[in-house]
Amino acid sequence: MKQIQQIFFLLIAVVIFSGCSREAPIPEVGSVKIEFSPNVNGGDFAGSEIYTSPEGRDYRIDVFRMYVSEISLIKEDGSEVLLSDINLFDLANGGPAKRVKHGFTAYKTYQEIEPGSYKGIKFGIGIPDRLNDDPASYALDHPLSISNQMYWSWRSGYRYITLEGKVDSTQAMDGLALGQSFGYHIGKDSVNSPNVIYQVLTFDGPEDAFTVVENQEAHIEFAVDVEQIFFPDSDPIDLVNEAISHSVPGEQFNLAKRVTTNLIEKALTKKPF
Amino acid sequence: MKRFAAVAFIVSVLLAFNACDKGPEIHVPTPYVLQIPADFPEPLIPADNPMTVEKVELGKKLFYDPNLSADGTVSCASCHFPDRGFADTTVLSDGVEGKLGRRNAMALTNIAYSQSLFWDGGVNNLEDQALHPIIDEVEMAADPAEVLSYLTNNEEYYDMFAKAYDGPPTMLGVVNAIASFERTLISGNSPYDRYIAGDLTAMSEAAIRGMKLFETEKSECFHCHTGFNFTDDGFQNNGLYDYAEYIAKGDGGRAEITGRQLDEHLFKTPTLRNIELTAPYMHDGSLATLEEVVERYSTVNSRYHPNKNDVNFINMDLNEQDKADLVAFLKALTDEEFSKNPAFRP
Image 1 (cartoon, rainbow over the protein chains, first blue to last red):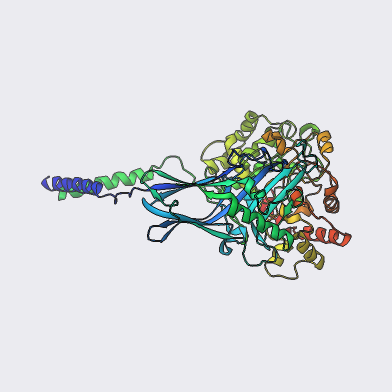
Image 2 (image 1 turned 135 degrees about the vertical axis):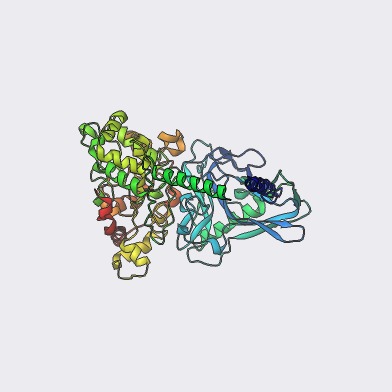
């Protein structure tokens, strides 16, 4: 009987001790929300709402999606923390039904970020060559899935940015009918030239530093003024006479580059943290 | 120590007897492994309806069974013929009592990859879709209670449900099984696939010319019929008619689901795989041949619709040779292994 009692106590002790030393404590982490907030000259923007250009021409944007690749946070020591290989941001929720599925939005929250001070953020607008692959490589819920309607063909790969809408093309500019379509499908050209459209942006200036606090969300927000994509003071896009680009080599590719330049250099600004 | 050994012996005996008295047999379903072509992605399988051999077999039997319909005359296969890419041969399909549907029956080729179903995308998964034709009054017009009564009183079905779900027939079991069978309908062995895989003799010269044309801005086809399944899985207004004609025909398309003007007369982009087999074409079955389809697209810019996908219809400047080559390419997407696959037949 004594022996059974001894075994019983031994078992209890093992259970108690194993309960105490179950796992290492879970480190406290924070999260980072990255958002591209579209606006029209500082005012509200919504997909398929009608706005008026500085010259008085009505237009609307139905589709505005862009790939953002290799999103990394830059630590104080200059090392980088990769958050994501790629994500698809949809800046025109409310557009027609052909828009992106799987709930892609204008923001994405990345979890389990190490708390601490960071000096900035870095990402590419578009898709680096290493990811511009056959969509069969990507599951249907992946940002690069073919079901997101951003894939062109094996020749050109993916569209990096898609901007589509309608414009009043009449001389009267009375806004009675937005009868003309415009569309900029921006990516590599179909002859597979060097990937000049893809651009890596780094924001690590004095106002770009931020802190990730455990159990809190750091919000990194970029404003995107759609008016500056099309109607900046220098090199505006004529939505009526420069209405289409599929990034075909030649004039269309130049137009794609101009739209991209306007987007990156004039429309996109980082809000202070 | 002796006493300890005795206790251990008694426990062992009890366990042994318990093992013999198992009770009712529980059937463990066998996972079904989809045959995915090398250059296709994995389809999304709902977590609550994993693929099993038992469900696929049951789903196939249900798919071909006209007794599910109100008058015992219409099955899923009545409008989805395996040798026609699982599409119908008629403009509109006959339901019970000769009632006609309002749109052309869509093909089921590679339907596992489709993330919205019907021409208007009214449902988002095959499980929900499967119920619609069963209860639709112009299709099978069945009363679910009668369907269940039929299945429950049929010994073979009762056994198949028991093996698939470890329970009696339910309507959830019906639609999950049909969806599972439909997900097996994968096609990826056409002459085009063999050509891409390296067999340069698999396609004719005309088809090769058509393929190259298909992927250029001259024909514009690839903008919507893109990727491994030749569809963007989205919704487009393809300029089939003028706006006024669409209005006169009365089918709102995607807007009937979303209620938005922007979606008026948008319809699902179908796959082009096995397209040669699925005539007639378009959401209303209005074009009888592939030649008519290509001809219609070549004049698309003469028709106006505010929602037309005209950012992708810029050139469409096709001569007669181009048109013939495009048709030759489309026919090279026919997969005979698929259309004759005995696994897809009753």
